[in-house]
Length: 566
Image 1 (cartoon, one colour):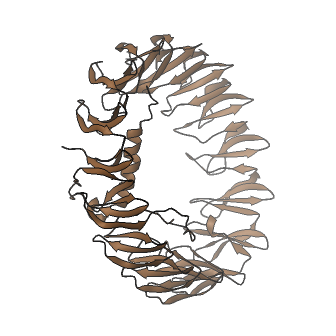
Image 2 (cartoon, rainbow, N blue to C red):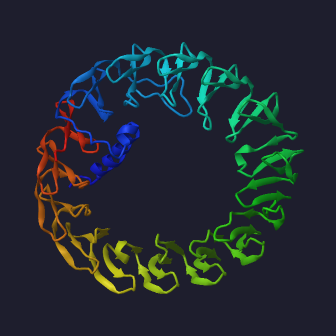
Image 3 (cartoon, helix red, strand yellow):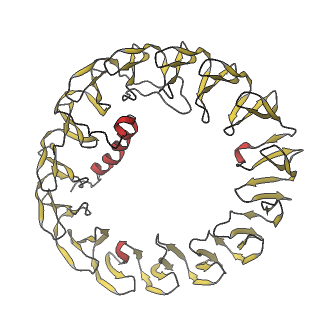
C-alpha cells in the first residue's frame, strides 16, 4: 500500500479554508446558493479556485479568468511570472494570482499592477510597481519607487511621495506614512493629521499613539495632540497592559497608570506586569506586588512564575516549591523540577526521581520512578523504572506493572504494552484484553484498532476480539465507517463488519472524507463515493480538491474542472 498520507483530507481542510478566506460576503451568506459549474475540459497549464463565480486560469505564463461554464470572460493576457516583492508590507505580500473579492481582482501586465472588474474592465490603471489589497475602499500602492494610497476608482488619495505606508490596526480612516526616516499620519482624504516628524509612532490603544522625537518619548491622541511627554528615561509599552505601564528612571523601574500618574515609584531593578500582579526585582531577587500595590511576596526568590490554580512556582537555592497569593509557602522548596498544576495535580522531580503531588504537597504518585508521562485525559500516567514502563492511575495505584518495553494509553481507555517485538492490550483496570502476540497495534479509530502479525493486517475491537481477519497486506485507519485495505498490491475498502464495500481493484485509494475518496487505477485518477460509484471517471493524470465539491483535474499536462454531481 502506498504511504497513507490522508492527502484528500488534508486538501479538504487546507484548500477549503483558503477558498473560504477568499469568497465575498455574499457567497459567505448562509442563504447563498452553492456554486454550480459545468464540466470544464483540461485546457490550461494551471487553474485556481472559483471566487465570486470566476476562476483564474493560466496558459503560457499568462493569466485570465473563466466563468462557471468555462467561458473566458477576462482575456488570458496578464502576467504570471513570479518575482519577489520589492516593497514587502509588514502585513501583506504581493500575490501573483488573486481571487476576486468584492467584484475586483488584482492583475499585472508588462510588470505593472492594476485592478479589473468581473467583466474585464480595467478600473485601476496598470501603472503601479506593486499594489496591495483594498481595505475599506483604499489600497496601498507603489509607483516609481514611491508609496501612496488609491481608492477603488484609481483616484490618488495619498500622493506617491513616501518611502513607506502602513495600515493602522486601530484606525480605518488613516495611514501611517514615512519619509526620510520620519513618520506621521494622513487620513483617507489626504489630510495630514500627525506631521511627518516622529522617529517612530506605535499604536498603543484606540485613543493613544506612542511617539519618539529627538530622543523624547510620550503619547499623542488620534488627532495628533500631545497628551503626555515622559519625564523619565524610558518606558516599555510592550510589557504594559490595560492598567499599567512600566517606566524607567535613573536606571530603576516603576509603574504608571494610563493617565500617566505614577503609582509605583521607580525603585526596582526590573518589573513584569500581568493582569492581576506585578512581579518586581530587587537585589537580583524577585517578589510580587498585588493590585493594591502591596508587596505580598517579598523579593527573596531567584525565579517566580505565574499563578495557575492559585499557586505560583518559586525557585530559591536550587530548589522549587509553591507559594499562594498571600506569599505563604504552601509546598516546601525541596524539588529539583516542578510544573504548573492542572486539575489539582502536577508531576515533580525530587532527588532525581519522578512523582506526582497535589496542591497541598501530598504525594499522589511516589517518587520512585525514572520518568512519568501524563496522558491527555489526566486519568492515567505512563511510568518508567529502569528501562521498563508501566501504568499508574491519578491516585498512584499501579494498573500495569513497570515491566514492559513500552506502555501507553490508546483511545477507548485501552493500554498498549510491548515486550520484545510483540504487543498486547490491557483495559484501564489492568485486565488483559489481548495477549502480547501482535507485531504491531495501532490506535483505535471509530472503535477498531488495526493489528498486524507476520505481515498481515486486520482489526480488533476494544474487547480484543478479531472483527476483521488478518488477511490484508496493509490497512488504513477507519474513516467515515470504511477502512482502505490492500491485497496483492491492489486496494479497496471494508466496512466495520469486514464486508468488502469497495472492490479491491485500485492501485490507490485515499481515506474517505465527506463521503468521497480519490482513486487511481492504471495511472488514471478519479473520484468514488462510499458505494464505489465513480462520480468522476478515472480518466485523469491527477486530481485534487479546489473547494467544496469542485475538483481540478489534469490530463496530458493541462488542467480543467469537474464537480461532483448530486
